Length: 61
Image 1 (cartoon, one colour):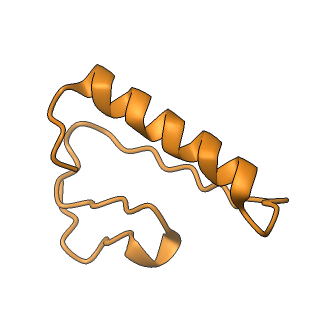
Image 2 (cartoon, rainbow, N blue to C red):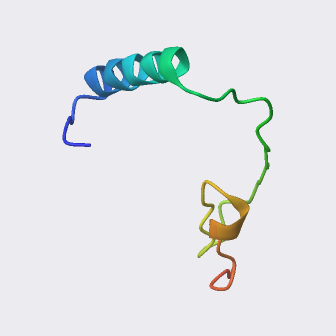
């Protein structure tokens, strides 16, 4: 979180994920994917990492 260099941050994240895959006591089998698209004139739409954190109540165009 404190590393500002994008390349270093990416490398740190990849290392962390590799370690997690090696030592994790569980296996990820499925991951839900949601797709959203909107035009440049749409304002106020906040797409979150999960469906319950996608906010549409302030949307306008």
